[in-house]
Each structure stands twice: as C-alpha cells, then as structure tokens.
Amino acid sequence: MDNKPITFQFISEPSDVNYGGNVHGGSVMKWIDQAGYACATTWSGNYSVTVYVGGIRFYEPIKIGEIVKVEAQVIYTGSSSMHISINVFSRNLKQPTFDKKTHCIIVFVAVDENGKKLPVPKWVPETEQEKQQEQYAKRLMDLRTQIEDEMKPFL
Figure 1: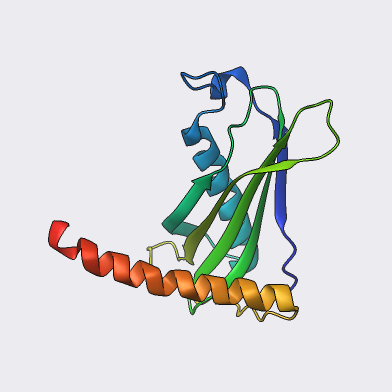
Figure 2: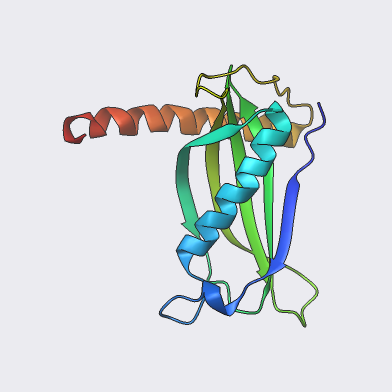
C-alpha cells in the first residue's frame, strides 16, 4: 500500500486562542487526533479509534492567524494497530517556510461496528528513513509497557 502522509492545512482562528493569546494546546491535540484518524481509516479501510497518544511535545506556540499544517503518516503496524507519526507546523502568512511546532505518536486500532478489533494491512518500511521510523515506534512501544507497569498500582 502507498503510505503517503495525510496533510491538513488551514488558518488558526481566534476561537482557538488560549489565555496567553496563542493557539490552545487542546486545539492542537484535536487537530492531531483528526489527522491521525484520517490516516488510520485511510490505511485500514475501517473505522478506527484512538488507543494511545504519547510523548506529545509542544516546541513553540502557534500564533492566531498563522497557516497550520498537520502531517500524519503510518510508521508501524501491528495486527490491528497503526502507529502514526504526527507533526504540526505553522508559518506566518508572509513567510514562505513552515516551522515545526509539535510532534507526537498516536496509536489507532481498526474496529468493526461492535468495537471488535479488525486486522490492518501490514506496513513494510522500504527506505532507510522508514526503517528508522519503525524502530522508533518499536522503542516507544517498549517504553509504554514500562510506563503502564509503573502506573498499575495507581489505576
């Protein structure tokens, strides 16, 4: 299957503002989930649900009125899960280049109408960069297992 990034572009709006005058982190998280969902359902061909968002990193604030670009791409697949790398960029309307503002990995699972997991097509990395991204996803899976073990007594 073709694994081209899903890209959303739009202008941040005044309704996205936080108390500091920039785009609210919750708005960015919503955009991440929307782009991830579009990527996951495109890849799987089925309804997909978010099961994990991890390591979200806000590098710089996004200003109201900037053009925002959200890119989502599959970097690893399990039997029913899809690990998707999300990068959020923005630029001033008068500037030609985007700056990276946020990064995270989001995991979706394809499900049927009863919420039962469905198999997804296997993603096979081809380029060196894709192989590195797959290894990145696998390392993060190991770290999530450690974090979940630490959290068990508090859940």
